[in-house]
Every structure is written in C-alpha cells, then in structure tokens.
Image (cartoon, rainbow, N blue to C red):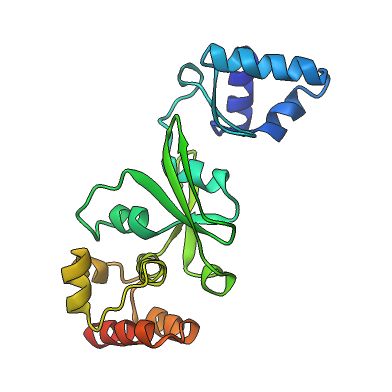
Length: 213
C-alpha cells in the first residue's frame, strides 16, 4: 500500500503507533480505518506487534527490525537492560533470545511475531538514571550503561556477590571487557552508584569494583 510506504519515508521509522496511522487516515471513518488496518496486515504491508503498535512490512522498508527499538515502544517508560544489555556489551557469553528491559510499570512477558520481550518492574528510585540513547542510522533506542545493566541484574535477581570473583564465577561475567568501557565504568560512575544504592549487598560489590579500577 502506497500510504504505508509514504508514512515510512516521511517519518523515517518503521515503527508505527496506531495514533500515527490514524492521524494519516484522519479523513476516514472509524470502520474504514479498521478495514484499512486489517487489509494492510493481511497483505504484509503492516505487521501487528501488539494492540496499538504496528511495524512497516518487509517490502516497504529498508532495514531489518531492531528488537531494542521495538522494546522501547512496547512499554513506556522502559530501557533495555539486564541480560540483553550485558550481552550487547559482550559481558556475558550466553546468547539472549528474549529482549529484556526494565520499567516502572507492572512487569510483563510479551510474545510477538517479531520476538519475545520481557519487562521487569524497577522502582522509580532505581530507574531514573544510568541509561542513554544509542543512534544507529534510523534506529534509536534507550539502553542501560554496562554498569547500570549489571546493577539492575543484581537488584532484580536478588544476587549477593561478595566480590568481583563471585560475580565472574556465577554469571561468567567478563570483568576485563567491562573495564574497557571507561566512559561508563570509572571511579566517578561507581561513586554515583554508591550514593544511589544504600543496600549493603550492593555497596559490597560496588566497593570491590572500585578497588580494581
């Protein structure tokens, strides 16, 4: 459908929330809008991810889908973290087949035609820091820094590491690779985390990391 290609080219994104599509179809009736969406999905011009969220179909876009971008749109606010972020940075060896994010909303597991997504609840005090936006061509998404992804993991999995050695053994965590991310892993960043996390178990592992910098 030419209208889908036009939207994609004008917006520069293959992710189309329903309000954007409805805005383009503003002159059509409610029934006509529903009929349009149904036909577009049947023909593969659109891919329905969940209620209110669609993707431009293969034939009308230039790039592959990015699961991190999709995750950001599926639940808002959220950012990619935990295993997905740790794997993205090359800090754990296991392949991660579910895109993992944290959010201040109720946690959820969502299976879609374009992958499986997990959203873990993180209280606001622990959510509002430690992430940034990555831009790769038309892809833009929010992701935790290496340090914040690790801390989110420790917090949500209720891990208790007495030292970096414990961390490396349990998670097969690559601490040497971790240290290469100097923009995010440094004395100042760890001190900021120590100010945020008052829990004894979190303070212990952060202080041991700081000793090794």
